[in-house]
Length: 446
Image 1: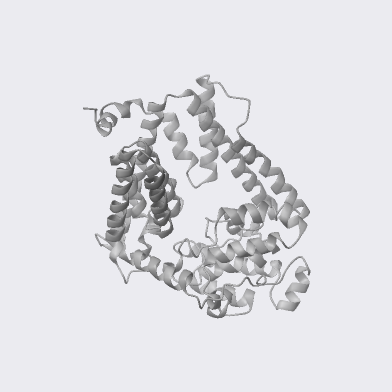
Image 2: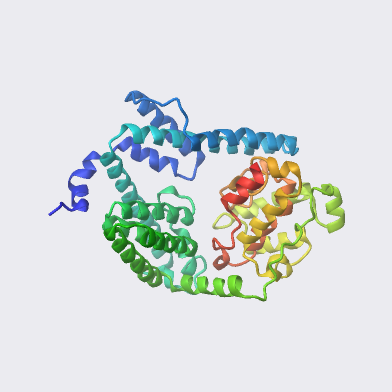
């Protein structure tokens, strides 16, 4: 009989863990940029100390990371973003993020080529154990704060109940969606390795995040495994994982399951919805200047929005959690877009915010040759950085004196963010939040 892999990890695998690699993985996924940068520098120093060869030939993904930086900077130059003194701080942060991502990919390439696979696997297992422990500590804090053994089941406690999963940040301390995505990768990794116990560990942590989109993506991936993979044991484990996910997720948060069904029925199935692509919320930049758009559509330009954001900044920073609250968001929709949030375009059309963001990105890209080829530039359209520089508190704090907002972002994307946060926390789903990699890459880099 073959030895149990989980038993081998407990007796031998822990001893073979690469502590430098474990610290690097923990640091590189951490939400703070300076932690990522420190992880890259320290791990690169370790690999040099060990005299592992560093390949000169760059892999194609690495070239992508390196080439996208000059494209973004040039786009910002042509898009008049660099004339704003507040832009440069954000631009440097954006460039640093791409460089850190490139360095992390390169160092992982060096690691895979020089460190034995069993040691890498043991390190990954330890990483997922630590992430699960931190996730359970997040859940324990929710239990203490609500004085409930099952905060997922609460109905009358703001910030908990259906939103409890949003507090399960895991070891990255980023959003719960990031935590769920990390564990989805773990599920697929251990599924291919036929280690069901580790699959269940990652599944439990992913389910605790109660991300409907992540669970839907998991079911799609598991279905693909069952259909496409020939190995019977892998198929069996994929089936067991599917059934387990249904049971665990339903047990933890039937409210989220009900919300998912409501979203599908009301937003994706209803034929009465008007999903035709409207013109940009404030008018198109390619056929009028910002001043003309402001005059015609009776909406403020970027300077006035920045003024309002600076006035709102102390209230946003004082709120718990630190982000724009429902009242300020509703005020922003009315003041900046000339209508109440429940009469604005998304409320009338019933379109999910993410789909609207994609359509707005497509409309922006075909509005001219420059947007199509180069985009708006780093931090000027739909990235987390663009949102962070507004000071809305949605991706961490940002100094009031450096608040920045590009006109393209104001026209095509900002409305979606303030509209979503004009609702209660139950509305903050992946389907509604506009953040997506396609809008970032297409809108900012062409």
